[in-house]
Image (cartoon, rainbow, N blue to C red; front, side, top):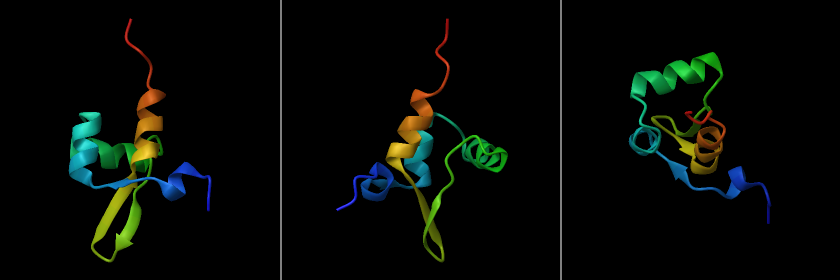
Length: 66
């Protein structure tokens, strides 16, 4: 059994990523293109998702407001 959280983590779809982050769909894909947001994983030829743990790690690394 693997101890890597991304290998055993829950996969979430774009709607949940939008709800978790508060970002729009286009903002998410722009950040992926810039390399500053976790890339999605391909689930099938027409479906992809994100590891929830990677989204949480990204959110935890955001700078806090003053």
